Every structure is written in structure tokens, then in C-alpha cells.
Image (cartoon, rainbow, N blue to C red; front, side, top):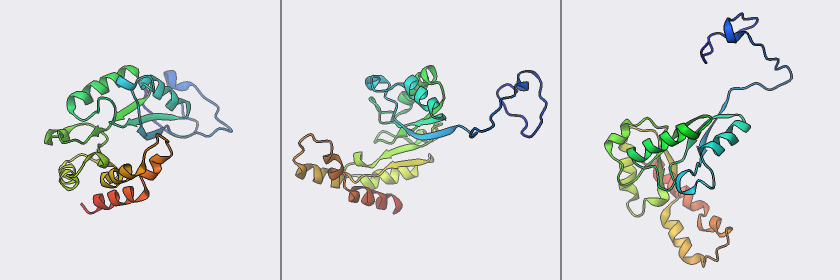
Length: 189
């Protein structure tokens, strides 16, 4: 009733629009899926994907809610940008969505009051102040998600890679130790 499931069971009798019966015999019936890691590129990279195209793709495969990553251009790393982003999503998305806020040097204590799925910490962008930045992130009351890459390893490997523009070198620069070191830093906090 009014988009709310009010009863579950066999041979239920409803009133109004709830009387429609859909035969799903032989089909798989499951709740909508939540995709917690989506990159919508509205704004400066809208040609790659926008809220409408992302939500259409989601619906095509049974995703009814997605959570958007904040590494857009501009990045979603403050309350003003977050508000603008949510307004844009409300106009364009055909499914429910949430937007993570990015952790940055400008993140303030009041950001802990935001209604977001999490604050995303991109460790490869923390530079030499990793420990201080992680302490600030962990002092927030927001749930945290991490992009775990040790920027020191990436920087070292980039210097020695003689980057030829070959996309395959990406994995060499971001070797497994870049991730395992970053995960260790997070778990030691």
C-alpha cells in the first residue's frame, strides 16, 4: 500500500492496486541489489557516464540502489559539493543512490554529521602525512571506507617505470605491496 509492503504470505487478499497477481513460476525472485562502488562521472566527465546512464545500467541487471564514489571532478569532499551532487542525482537517477564523501585536508568535525554511507579515504593521496591523516579520519564518527594504496611505493615505482604510456604498467606501479602496506597501516590504527 502506497509503495510499502504491508504483509507477506500465501493467498493474501489486498485492496486497490495490491490485487494484481504476477506469475513468477520458473523465475528467480530476489530483492534489488545494492552496488556499493559505482563511479558516476557527471560534471566534467559526464560524457563517460551520468546519473541517468548509470541508473539505467543498474536497473538492467537488478541493481536498485548504488553508492557513488567521491573521486569526481570536482571531488565530493565538502558539504557544499555533496549537496550539489545529491541534487544532481535526484534529478537524473532512476534508482535510489547514496554518495560517499571524500576525506581531505579540509574535512571538518561537522562533516561527521553528514548523511552519507561513508567517508572514503584515498590513501594514495595522503602523501607523507599518512599517520596524521589516518588519525583525523578515525576520529570522525562517520563510517570509513578505504582505497588502500601506499603512495610511497607508487611514487617509487613510477620513478623507475620509464612509463611508456602502456596501460599494463599500471599494475606494475601499483604492485601488491602498495596495497598490503596500506591495509597494514589502516589496521594498526
